Length: 589
Ligand code: ADP
Ligand code: MG
Image (cartoon, rainbow, N blue to C red; front, side):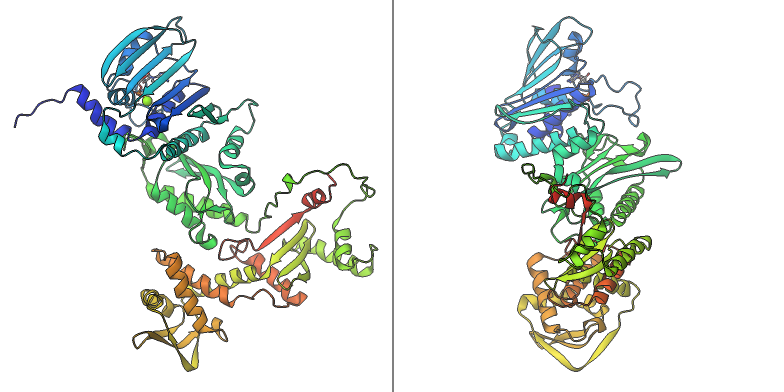
């Protein structure tokens, strides 16, 4: 067989296969070009899932008449001047997007270069130049991609429904909009306005306002901001952004954004490291939301791994992983017991009440009075004493305050000078037990208790299966347990923590839970799951009456226990109503 050099038209088609798998990638390339051209406004209009047309227009620097012809040539770029692939300041540099798009669509580029008076248009239809003439564009560039993949039916066949393709495209636009908060992004789909992310106010905190538009106000209210600087051989590496609280999660991973040096990236390894950084504060099947910006020296990063540039390679991947773990852990620990947003901001202000007592300061003494002795609002020596205790509580760093009452046998009401706190006793106790158990497990010191009469438990087939796969963990946890006959197991000793508990129920529930929700492959996550399940059984169930002393000792223990802000299932263990929120409830603001 004779070797021949492939014609350009074919090369472009092959490249198109890599760079532009689907309409979303066309959009990505076009928007990146607009960003590289210093645009401050980018409009996108998608029709028929991107199949009929994709139009991206901008107000950027524009393309000069002669360059217009070059722009659709392969490997022609204005961006790689100093021939250094490791020092790239632009999003593009491979010079293959426009020629690839021109190979599989009818492409029109209309542009006016800033310092030029005339604008020109070029039309390349599936590799063939059809038109090159003056036009009437006032500024910037408009790129229209018509009938994408029409002549590549194989590719067309793999596209999803319009809805599916639009979702992809929107996700890509959101990503680019998040890391370019100064640029206005306007999206239309099939003539309908989808969003207009502008920056009219020239917001001081433009990033935050963009994040709240894309990830929602609720995310901003329920997230932790962090900003850390590290050094890698004297080079600064920073990681900053917003991560959601463990109690604010989603069932999917759509709202997770990672950027490196201003580029959106996709990296499964980093995503799973981020999830693991939350440790066991997340419920199974739930995912945190985040928007994380990494900034590394250019030479630390190889962007030229894949034509779509969504994958990157770091000089030291483990270093990046470890700074992610450490910064997220720190941020979460600092917010161990966070007041949950009650959405009071959305309460409707009712018409002006004559607020008789407005002048009276609502300090903790009065709240205390009202709670302790709601018949009279008089200072008594008793409340005076409690007030002092609360003040000293704060001095002693007891952020969860002093317990004053148990409500409905499950909620501890507590007061600190910063607010009223409600604690879910079952959730809180569950977490305390889990942390204790974990510590013992990590130190290989789980006490066990021999049962005088071994327990035989009959299991269903699938329960038995999940038991068998985890028998080692059970043993390590302090169970002396093994298979017994065809469909039973025998328990001879149990972890001391579980003494007096219904072992049969615990084991059956655990096996069922594993079967219905699936089982993590990571060993540590598995251990956490099993311990968490056991602790949930053992924890003080709702409905147990506690004395004030018992309540206080629970609070003190929570204050020194890691992760005590959430129960094992990611629910909050306590919420705080601060004075502002209370005043809002009483319409005093
Ligand atoms: P790359 O972006 O890798 O350089 P492209 O094929 O995407 O390659 O674009 C080729 C060239 O066309 C760019 O280098 C740039 O000079 C020019 N170009 C493309 N789109 C625009 C735009 N919206 N505004 C200004 N110039 C553009
Ligand atoms: Mg480009």
